Image 1 (cartoon, rainbow, N blue to C red):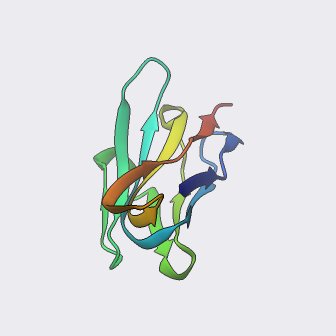
Image 2: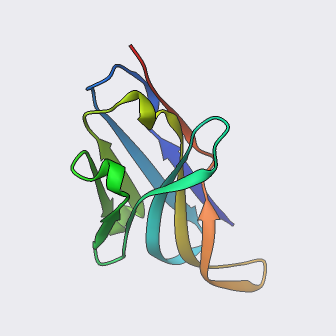
Length: 124
């Protein structure tokens, strides 16, 4: 199967930084677009940033200039460097990866897998 694991969440004060990581592993043949989403309490899950397999990024407007998305294709890992954090960034952050995989006799082409999420809390 395929596993998507996010790491790096925590509690920080306003203005501080955090770096999240997301690693894809398992019976994977390729990893394509990868993205970060976040979900605050009582709200829907929203897009934060995405990066293509050839390193083209795209950001939601409220994080432009503060967050930087990157990836290491050799490690099937994506990162989100979050600077100048504000309380409104508080949420569970989820990784989404579009993956080619093959297991249990089935080929999955460009199939979306989600991680379990990591909590980011920005509070003084």
